[in-house]
Length: 164
Image 1 (cartoon, rainbow, N blue to C red):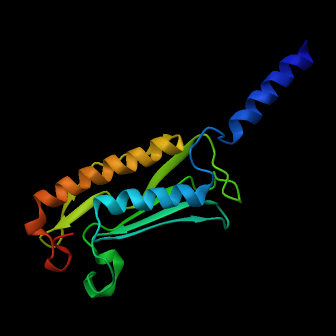
Image 2 (cartoon, rainbow, N blue to C red):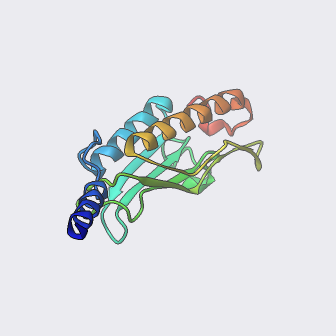
């Protein structure tokens, strides 16, 4: 009886360790979907989502209103008025890109739109834990909200990155 209980607990743990119900086959596919989703919202902006399998496997998302360094202040991405670096599932993915059931998302940099030089408008960033599909939906909703705030304040943003 004890062995059967142990076996059930072990099987439950083993089954929930890696996600077999997600539509993504690995971290690269999820990163590609994230990048495509955000590029549909900001088609003329810089978006890069990459799965990295080095020390702590996970997805890193880079976003900037300007398409390249010609549109960033002094050619530095950190000077972009809506620069974001978002870490997704850092250390939670398998080394070969296996996707876990639950993923944490954290903003390393971002959550703000800078207008009129140094005035910032908060975009309402929230940390999120969830399934891969929930994470992608959260990012889509967040960037839709960011797009709306950007459109409302477009005339106050630096000229080089307007009309994105």
